[in-house]
Image (cartoon, rainbow, N blue to C red; front, side, top):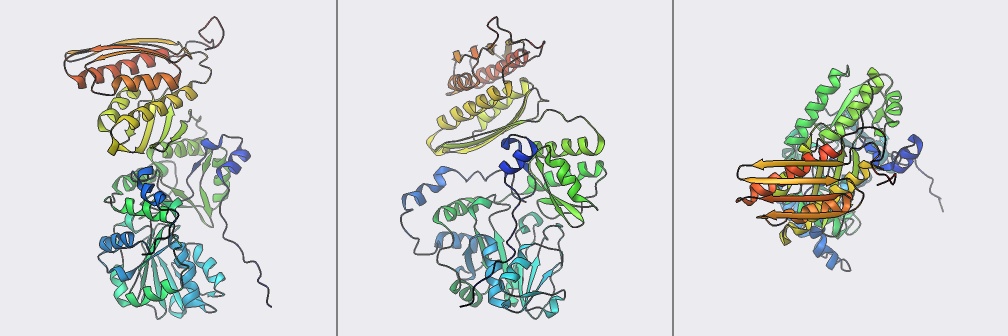
Length: 506
């Protein structure tokens, strides 16, 4: 019997925990700019999306996830028999190498492209050749990873596979080449924000799909992952915000003297001679980017995370002092998932998005008038009402604030503010006491304002008194949140190094 030998395994970068230990940081301070994934999960990625799948998790899906394949077929205007599901597009890359190039030849377009292609060729015992016209199998990465460029698709005699993992960012596709025998690969890992779910799909002629699926392991995608993908594709995809942030980040990098290539993806590639040096210098700040021969690849996150990257680059390249970094906090329950980035004090850069427009606006007012930088995002069971989300968003914000305050040394401790809004008047008094006490009177209350303040006081460990009256419940609530924010801004003022208590601690 011939014994197998180990191949050169696909190399994943170190985990957050390993990087944090090397850099002497808290693992929560590590920000990954090396994975080309979305900054946050999609709004659809919440417990409710998994409820049905969990109820049937003891069963197999005998229909091979017909509903998901139908949704994919509808999105791309192809037949159901032209769609195959896989565990990410990587499953197809490995499988297609074995189907079309076992013991043969593989080429990639462009030559400098995704490292999974030569890895798959190695598994198939195939050789990599430079000329696509001479290859049994040709992978075209469009847009290309790691350079971000939108390459031309060649006409080749071998089997053509067009990997469109990043096509949503470019706004183009090559589905018309399916008629000529090409196979197009897509994934839910990038624009859809489901990298951890591992769901990809292939689009090809019915004849090719029949061949591909006959060589797949049965149900390589889990029912939970399929449910997340089905929920994600049910919402129209909008990457305009991500593209705008990509262009903003490219402009800021250019100001630093770097020259990112024009990108049609969610990452930027910066040609340079010694990218490893910059990778190592940035890692000391918890910023993880990826080096290639001849360049550096940086994934685009959201503005707050990207500013952390830019601050670290300014420190390394220009000798500028590093400003305080936002605290990162996460709260996950069966009902909600919330993530927070908080800097106290900040510059009033605030973004709150939980799907509850009114209370998102209220928390934005509190954080802005409190002089904080806050980015709070969450998803939850909004179909059951606003109670769970309002409570959890305020508890999560309070937990992050409590952690940001630390031992509360040097803080003024007390704050008071009166805020009018038309006919409404709110009065708020706050004490960073370390004791959770709330005395709240809001009349009329739009429904959850008083409970929101109670939830905040509990987890932030503050004493909070709020009195607000008026005729319009929106005006009353908004005046209250602004007043609490302004009272907090006063209490958070630094006036020395003492803990403002004769006991010596709060």
